[in-house]
Image (tube, rainbow, N blue to C red; front, side, top):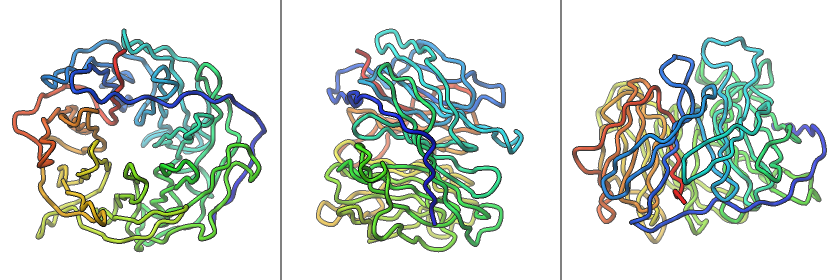
Amino acid sequence: MAALTAVTAVTAPQHAAAQTANAAGASYDLLVGTYTTNGKSVGIYVYRFDPQTGGTTLLSSAPTVNPSYLAVGSGNRTVYAVNELPGDNGPANERGGVSAFSFDPASGHLALLNRVSSQGNDPCYLSLSPDGKYLFVANYSVAANPGGSFAVLPVGDGGSLSAAVLSVHHEGSGPVKGRQDDAHVHSTVFAPDGRYLFAQDLGIDKLYGYRYTSDGTRGLLSPTPTRYVNMPAGSGPRHLVFDAKGQRAYLTSELSATVTVLQYANGELTPLQTIRLAAPGFTGKQGAGAIHLSPDGRFVYATNRGDANEIVIFSVDRHDGKLRLVGRQSTLGRTPREFAIDPSGRWLIVGNQDSDTAYVFSRHPDAGLLGPNPVRLDIGAPVDFKFVPAS
């Protein structure tokens, strides 16, 4: 069951959505979010990315605590970062935050605008509403019960954030002790139609659906008629991504280390296929992480952590959207939490959180496979990656 709690009433003007550049010869800024509490990094790093070679040149860094997930908005002129607190060693009553930065793509410079509370603990995901009015933040946990939540933060004219106007709490638990003792919201994702939001709850094995009404006539968010999709007990749904046509969605479930294909229509998700990430006979620890589609929508990529530490590659059937395994690629390090494919589709960068490296792999657009001899980037606890046009 989910409880919707209004915090205050506020309006915010619409801003332009982030643009995407697809020209193979264009240059990009590469933004990297990290964990800072281990002392190996300072916050967000900005690199100039060379789409001809896959090489990177450091432009700047912006100090901020545990920016483990990033979002780009305001016509690429604003960057948002979670401040994932309290983290593993902080006090349970320490709330996390979300920081807003102005961003100059030409110079790669970030400047802090403001920081607001995420209204929960351990914020781990950000998504902008399609109209640009609100930033949604997923809180993995909230001390004390109820468990995980997500909050809705208004976006101002210059990209700064206001205090949350809505906080949505989930309640329940799952069968995996220590990981599913409470609700744990791990992502908040809008469908391409812009009318529905889905919140993936790892702790209670549910995908919650909400209708989004930006004019407030239905209270900003209201549950869909079916309210949620039940996933297999103990599977731990984590991240969801839609195809460009808005007909299919692809889900990683962390605890079962699987990818699920779902049919989408009018605010409803229906599971079609589930595939295990690990190779047959694999007996080590696993943990499904990030999932992304190639820019042309022909391939799905997902990370598997634990002892696997690999990217698993699937082709997408153009008729029904189902997946077929086509390859695996070691990430050459430990704990690949996130990755990104550049807008040209020629490169894939993945971060190894626990070995302080990232690798830029060449990518074959037709076969979907990743090439040998990747470019290595040494950086402390890299977690998230975003490509932004450099001008």
